[in-house]
Amino acid sequence: MLDGIRGIAISMVLLFHIWEMTWLDMSVGPLTLNPIGTSGFLGVELFFFLSGFVIFDPYVRAWLSDAPTPTIRDFVRKRFLKIVPSYYLAIIILVATGYQHYGSLAEAGRDLTFHAVFIHNWFSQTYGSIDGVMWSLGTEVQFYLVFPMLAWAFLRKPILCASGMIATAIIFRTAIIHSYFFHQLLTQLPAVLDLFALGMASSYVYRYLEKSKPQLPGRRWVTTCAALAGVAAVCAMVVWCHRIRFDPDAIALWQAHYRTLFGLTIAWATVGLLFAAPFLQKAVANVVLVFLAAISYNLYIWHQVIGRLLIAVHIPAHVGSQIQADHHWQVAFSVVAVLSGVVVATLVTYLFEQPIVRLGRTRRRAISGAVPLAQQAVSK
Image (spheres, rainbow, N blue to C red):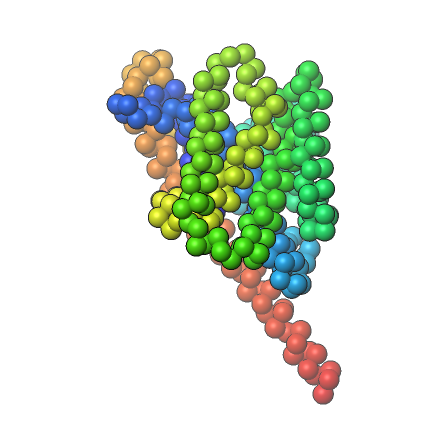
């Protein structure tokens, strides 16, 4: 189920950047994907929510079953293998091929150093360099650094911890509204802490209900209706963003004021879907969305770069200088850009990322298996 939601998140981001490059009208008769295209940046907020849910879930399950919680070492190892290799690979390729170029050695050193340690999103000079989407990876990794402490507190005082994280985000966003760097500050960790908190809270609520309310699976019609209502609420907020997209500073102000509300609707929909009827779960976790979820990290890293490169080399070719006015080009480019992004992401995921992840797992099992043998030898 969560894979299906992750597939939705990457689809939103992908459609948003395609729309930004083409201004394509994504309508076919009465059906339209325009609200998703123009408001697809909310997919990043959905990613933050999912991250909070997924990385906290093993801790919740262990805590509620009185089992040992995962160690910090295991957490760091898993996050490192998932995030760092593909991220560094992209940086190396984009710099080595000249996609990102620098005016001086000092500028290059600063940019690469800040990206290497995931603080590039703190500074305006490096915030959008190399690959514009990488700002969110800085925010994500910075959350990982404080997560062990937050997880410890959340398991013991869930309501207090969640409330504190949400309040911190709301206070921070309120304080920066009149700042000169408002838009950049709106993407920093304190400004999105409520999304991570609501993801963690959703995991806690789901696992708690799963354990303490075994009768819920027998009330599928109730949980399914709740899930559909939550999905409708999320869609309503996406449409709301679509309608105000051209008002001055409207989107940034909307995020500052309503990000917590958006996170609550996501939490409502997610927990509802996890208890919903199988037909609805299968509709969300369909084969296409699950596949996109599997390659989502590398698709996120590469899709915008690939789109911009295709435009630069005129693939597909367009007529005239105003490419956004050429509808045939808009459609052709969108198809080529999406397919190219999917192909590249698939190759990087299964030929680079996954072998590294499997190697890390194999080494961990080998080390884990060696400890009991050593202990046995000592006991003998």
